[in-house]
Length: 203
Image (cartoon, rainbow, N blue to C red; front, side, top):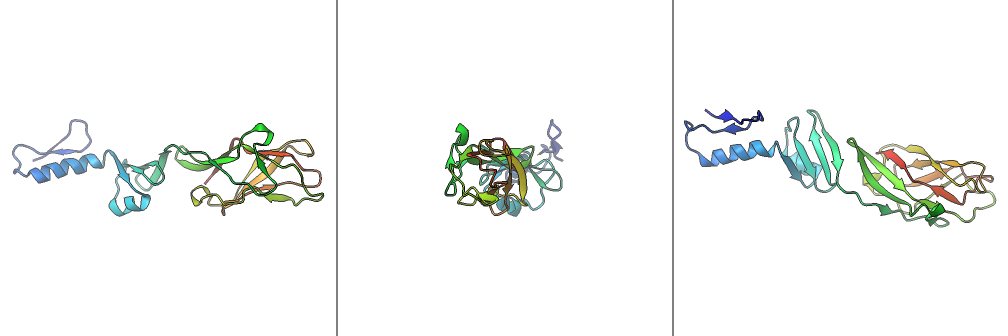
């Protein structure tokens, strides 16, 4: 009759009195260790097709999103992402990069305690506005990728210059369609730079 490992992990070890079966011996050990180590899958869908009944404590690495997940007994929970490079955001006409010498406007995918988020950095310039500007401007001319778009609208405060502006903060709407809309511009609010450093929104 098989016994279990010395570390209480439930790995069955064949006994000398068991019928000889090298194939079963190898498979039993491999299967037991695989579900207790970090399993690698091409994607979440590939994982779902392979692990029909995951067990609490299983850990997987998803190669398409570079993410470490743990099964908590009812769902897969992200615990970490791999290195997520900063990507430059292409700007709408009228805006240029490196506002107030704060660097290029960029985004990246961030994981905080299992919560995937969009992080922004940098700032943009705008040298001129119409006499009566619209109350809002979309900053990016290309939508952010689906992987970093929020599931609902996210509204946060962002700083702006107090030069030519009666306020030092604007509202940023991170929209579900992947566009960044700055709100609060007006005839008395025409800031030459708008900042995004430290902006983080939940996805």
